[in-house]
Amino acid sequence: MTDDTVDNVLLITYDSLRYDTWDQIQSSLVAGPKLEQAGVSFEKAFATGPGTSPSFPGILTGTLPLSYDGLGPLIEERPRVAVELRNRGFSTAGFHSNPFLSSHFEYDVGFDEFKDYQNPMMGIATRIFPRGIEINNPKFERIDNLINLTGIIKSAYRHISGKSRPYVSAEVITDDTISWLRDADRPFFCWAHYMDVHHPCFPQKNIESLSASNTSTWKLSLNCTRCCLMTPQPLPMKRSGRCVICTEQLSST
Image (cartoon, rainbow, N blue to C red; front, side, top):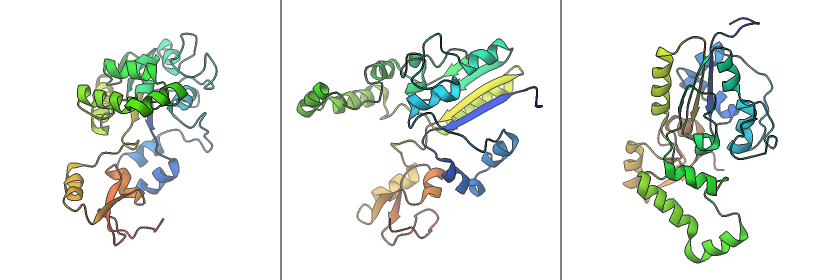
């Protein structure tokens, strides 16, 4: 890569992970610091919004969130980084499991290979509830108060899909990304997006069983961000105030 040319582009994004926290856990990571050193560094970076729907148009289309018909599915006229690079001879691929960045929202356009790991039910749900499966309409809210509509929808999804949220683990995203990169034609543009830090967090089996066997003496907390991100989920802590993983003394806040 020179000032005038770009050989390959690997874009790695994390949902709900702040850079200050990322910076704090650098010493415990293997690949992260190497990727950061090898990549392009921006001293100033600004999100175009607080959540997925308003943020990612800025990242993947270079446009403001309310332009080109605003939030929701990307329209055909909206420019896309993947399209521009593919038109210049790049192989393109994307791997993630955020439903609001899925093919249902036209984020697959421009990618030769695109995996969003979604099922048809999630596509329908995200169309009906573009801001998530929550009630923000007064009429729906009254119905929800009577029959727990949101609970029914979430339970139906868990029953059909076998999981409570549509996210897949970092291992799946990483394995599929590396597999594609091994055989990809050069130059390439590859995007991998991770959801592990995003709520709801699910404990690893060893932590889950430990918590279940000590329900009277353990509680959930996010104070130990280092271990929370390494596992990744809110970890149970002893009431002595020490993290169960690294035994670090935790703050009282």
